[in-house]
Length: 79
Length: 362
Ligand code: SF4
Image (cartoon, helix red, strand yellow):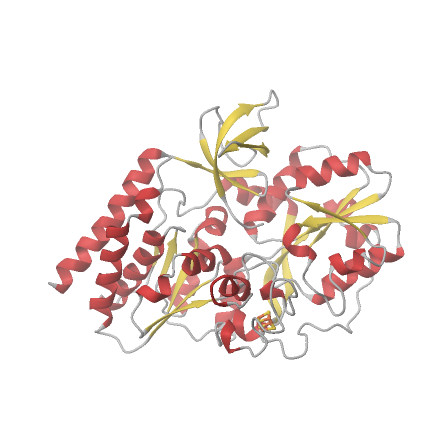
C-alpha cells in the first residue's frame, strides 16, 4: 500500500488532474493533484493511485554523483 | 528512467567496504529506519549481511498497517456487521486481526468488505452501490495527502465516507524519542513519506536528541550511502538532517501535499498499536469535513475493551527495534503469512513478514 512505484504518464485527461500512467505494460488510473504541470512522457512516483513527485533523469544523475562523492570522501578519510 | 546505477554491484560493494573500514572506529552503532519499504529493500538485497557486526540496522515503526490499533479495527468491524454498509480498504489491511477478527475473517460472518488499490476504486464502487461505503483510510502522510487532495478536488458520492486511522511519521518518531522508547544512535528517514512532509519536521529529532538523520532512497546504494553519511557525521562530531535521496526528495517537501493535509486534517493524539497513545501523531478530519467523517456521521461506537497483542505475539518489541522477528517463538512456526498472528506478519511492509520471506520455513 505504501509502496511508491515509478510510472510514466501516457495520458492526461481534460480535467488536468487525472489520467493514465504505465509501467511494465500495466496501465493505471492516476490523480495528478500533487504535482505541477503533468505532461505525457513525464515519469512520476505513484503512491496509492496518486503521483506524489516527478522523477528527473538529470536529478538521478546528480544523485549518483552525490553517492560517489560520499564514497570518495570516505575513502579519503580512511587512506 | 535508469535506476540500475543505484543497484550497481561495484558501487554497492565499495560502499559496504568503506562502512566496514570506518566501523572499526566505533563500538556499537544502532541505526533505525522507520519505513516498511526500507525494510523490504534491506531484506531483499541482504544488506545486513554486508554490514559489520557492530552496526545494527533496526526496523522501527514504519508500517502503517502494523500500528493500526485493534480499537479502530474492532470499531469498524462491529459497526459494519450491524449496519447495512460496505467497508472498503487496501488489501494489506484486510488480514490484520483486531481483538478477535480481521476484516477478512469478519467477511465470512457477513461483513461486506471491498478491497481497493486506491481511493479512485472506492469512489467508483460507491457510485454503483446502494449502500453506505466507508473507506477505512489507513497510511502515513504519503497516503493521507493524496486522499486529502482527492477529497478537496473531486465531488464524492454521498454514500461514501471515511474512517481515518492515518498517522504522521515525524511526530510519531519524535514523541517516541521524547518518551525514551527508542534506544538508537541515528535515524534513516523514510524516502517516500518525507517527499510529503519534507525534512524540516525531523530537525527537532536531530537537534534535541543528538541524532544524525539521513533521508534515503530504496535502492541498495541509497541505503548504504545513508549509513556512510551517518558514520561521517558521527566521525565529524556533527549531528544534522541530510538528504541522500535528492533525486526525488526536497528538504521542504511537497507543498501541495502539505497544503492538502492542512486543509483537510487536524493533528490529534492517536493510538499506535503496541505503543499506546502518541500525542500529535494522527490525522483526523477537521470539523468542516464532519459530513464525510464516518466516526461522526454514523456516531460509530468504540469499546475500551480491546486486545492489541495476541497471546505470545511480540510485535510491540519488534516495532521498537528491541527484538528481531526470529526472537519471537512463534515466528514462522505458528505465525506465518498464511496464518498471521500479529500485524507485523501481514503487510509487505511488516518487519516479520519481510523476514519471513528469507528466513521463514514454508
Ligand atoms: S512473528 Fe508473528 S507473533 Fe511473533 S512478533 Fe511477529 S507477528 Fe507477532
